[in-house]
Length: 304
Image 1: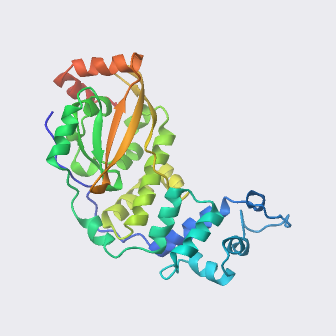
Image 2: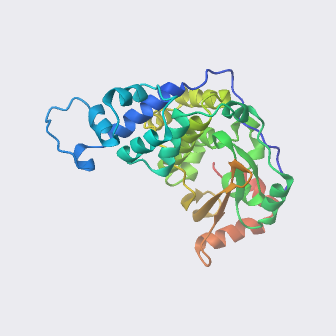
Image 3: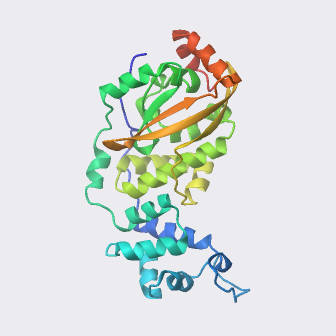
């Protein structure tokens, strides 16, 4: 199949995401999910005015002063040390992904803005690799959940993204703004959560990215589901698992996916899907592959 040019979502000028607000809300949300008994502290208050741990309780667990932690939770984290962030991460019981997100928010690197604005490019050898994965749906995604390049089988399974304008080749836009993708993903809610978690991680790495700000703004206006999930401030990266699809041409599919961060450009990920050997899903993929170019044309309307 012919490769397609990489492109990121285009958006109107948008104000950058407020890094201080992101840091503040993230810490508040992580603190709110912990109860005193979760961290071995006595709960003396039946009339707690805040959900989860109080600031003074969290500060005690982290070994910092209440005033210091309060300033950090208000978004003033520019001079915070790595040791203090590690202590707060332990106190909040953050996952590795959440810990990294906290570090990006509290200690942003100055070169991130330049990186976020540069075009996303995929090496020619990687495009050739996609075509070589005959029978395996595969694509390469980039920042902001952009779909950059894909192979024939990915088009047959997910729809031919070449029929979409470049700015709409984006998982967030497709999942939240195109009803047909709710029908394609049996567990749509989980797919939506995974997308939002990745966008949150991007926001931590590139808070000054105007295209990301425009994407978040657009989805916040147009999708109530996106607003609900974005407000959780959850971050995680799911590198493998199983996706259940309801394909209109071949029926139900249970596909195992693997996501590989590409060496030399960690913002790009190769995502592949395969079925368990001998399964009905494997036979369905073989059927799609046998249709050749017809499978691509049929795949262009598969979500519908």
